[in-house]
Image 1 (cartoon, rainbow, N blue to C red):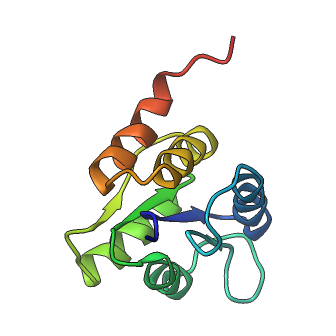
Image 2: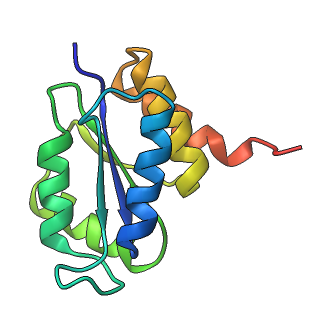
Length: 129
């Protein structure tokens, strides 16, 4: 069974793909985490089309958590989700790295969308030391 999908929305293609690589090293199922960073022409920014495609690619029937980094990535992700509304696609306000790690590990355990979403949000309160 495929896990809940995760979409990493960043202004930087390198940041999104680097975080996805980190999650891959933690053992997430291939194809369950999709990076949507940067613009179509390789600049810093966000792409409506890349986010929409990433949500589609991450959706394997158990829902999708969308994690934006900051600022306009939130605005662009909201626009995509408003235009293509699905009950099982959730934009989550969580720290980008910590939230992604928590969501990915929880999703890999087979948890449902609500549990993965909660795990990402609760990462905001995790202390580092």
